[in-house]
Image 1 (cartoon, rainbow, N blue to C red):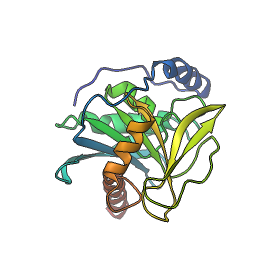
Image 2 (cartoon, one colour; image 1 turned 90 degrees about the vertical axis):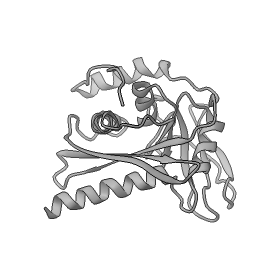
Image 3 (cartoon, rainbow, N blue to C red; image 1 turned 135 degrees about the horizontal axis):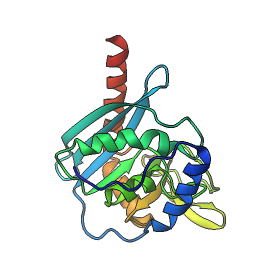
Image 4 (cartoon, helix red, strand yellow; image 1 turned 135 degrees about the vertical axis):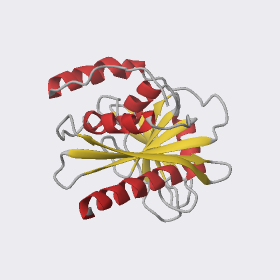
Length: 227
């Protein structure tokens, strides 16, 4: 998969925050333009010493529910762990994995935040700006914002609000199971983010593409440690 470089990677916290502030206005919340079939999932793991990122991407066919392609890349971390700046630590490896794909997905589901970020530029937003395709953040935990607990059934949802604005949706993907914190990344709106997440969350709490990506990077990390 080919895509142009969006920016150079900063090497300081101050420069990273400034870049987030510059990029955030470029995020576009808009309805999904068409039915999307090929959904990618992206996730990362880290080496035992925390020096390397293991990034995995899978492409999953929504209609046939089959795995189309997968790719895993191990790369040196360029940025330290700083809350709110995780995309600068994780995204270089994720982008390297996307560059190795032969299949161009219609959308990407990320294990992380999208708009639900203090500076409105979580990993899904940042990735969407790089790839130019719809992206959605499907996080297991909240980074920012307040909400009322959604109902207990699959599809029950509540707005996630931060700074007086909606930044996400707290979405129940299985009956009586902890909700996900879903937020648009790029070229997607709240309704589209919920639609894609529920369409891909078939039997588990997590959408199938991100679940498969998590399995991929977990296996790669174990293989590296045992080898």
